[in-house]
Amino acid sequence: MERVALVTGGGGAIGRAICVALAEQGRKVGVADLNADAARDTATGLSEAGSSAVGVGCDVTSAASVRAAVGSIGEQLGQVEILVNCAGWDDFVPFVDTDEYFWDRVIDINFKGVLHTCSAVVPGMISTKWGRVVNIGSDAGRVGSSLESVYSGAKGGVIAFTKSLAREVARDGVTANTVCPGPTDTPLIHQMTDRLSRGEGFVEALERAIPMRRLARPEEVAHAAAFFTAEDSGYITGQTLSVSGGLTMS
View 1 (cartoon, helix red, strand yellow):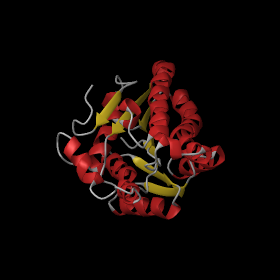
View 2 (cartoon, rainbow, N blue to C red; view 1 turned 135 degrees about the horizontal axis):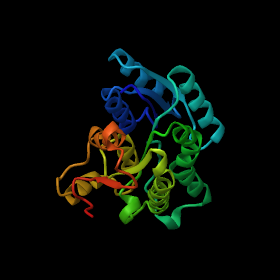
View 3 (cartoon, one colour; view 1 turned 180 degrees about the vertical axis):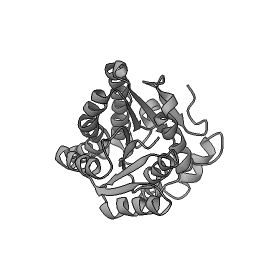
View 4 (cartoon, one colour; view 1 turned 60 degrees about the horizontal axis):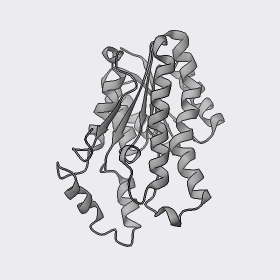
């Protein structure tokens, strides 16, 4: 069905894969990213493949920017009925070496960004009695992760917020679920490991720790997100699904 989806971080590796998966479901896709050019590139690729899509610049740390992006997508595609929060950022740093600027950046992007987008679109979902919210968390938020203490806390907040939101809007036909990727083969993880003093071999060590002996592919995370947005997934809400090759099991 041609419902309207908004994907934040849609210019990145996982976000772009999610946009493709939603387009394959027949959704119109609003691609939002801090990098407006990357958002438009994703949208152009979807349009060339025959889907309805627009790309907009959006800073999820700014409520005004989020509302402007939602308004632009609404004017061009229609009211947002599916929200996938994929925008995120982190760096590998021991907690004792971080400062308040770092904390604020991680929390503003990974947690408050989710609050901004949900605040902008969930009321519309409630009014029409249909909606799907999928927040991209992280297994770091479920079990913790060395060198990612603040990020783990922020993603743990996303998981708890999603469950609480799911309880509040369940009777309004709106679902909210979290997809938690494990280590995923994206440019960001390679950039993060490249900055480590012991970065050489870090990805290989991660792969050895994963039962499937490899990092996730972005499209594998995207499939999980698309599952939660499907028309027939309306009785599934408040759930947290790991996509980690067995690294975490619960």
